[in-house]
Image (tube, rainbow, N blue to C red; front, side, top):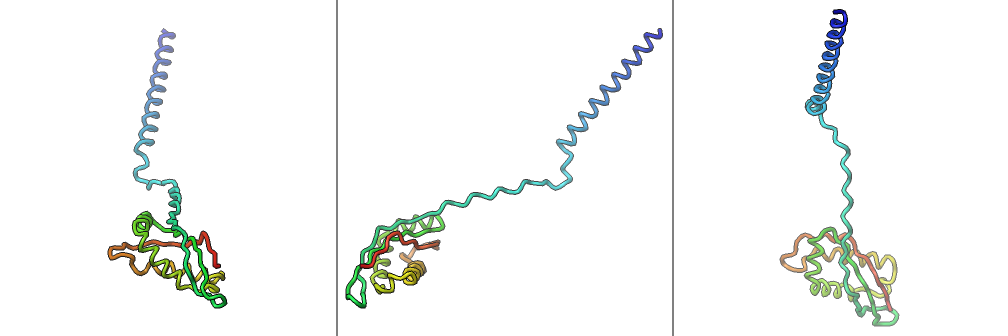
Length: 157
């Protein structure tokens, strides 16, 4: 009977250990699933979205006559690319190339050859081209996002 009592005692301890283990697993599961609802969620820092790729509108080069102080008529050959901020601006400019080229030809032909050949003259011309977009090309022109004027070719002859 001593063996029987010892054996039933071992079974009782084993059942108790199993019950404690099951309870502990249940508690851990509960806290993992539902335990952090009262605490604010800590989200990892948002990964900054990669900047949108730059959009460019490349225009065919312009050749215009300009006035020069020393030699009279001179030629200005200019290649332009416009950096735009969004697809809407890019699409609008590509759809309206004839009025855009016309306005640019008028602006370029009004330049002075000696001034246009200098760095300051080129920077001033880039500002004038950017300012040109403040006046609508067409009656239905949306807000345009022309960010920069890039000279890809520039010859004064």
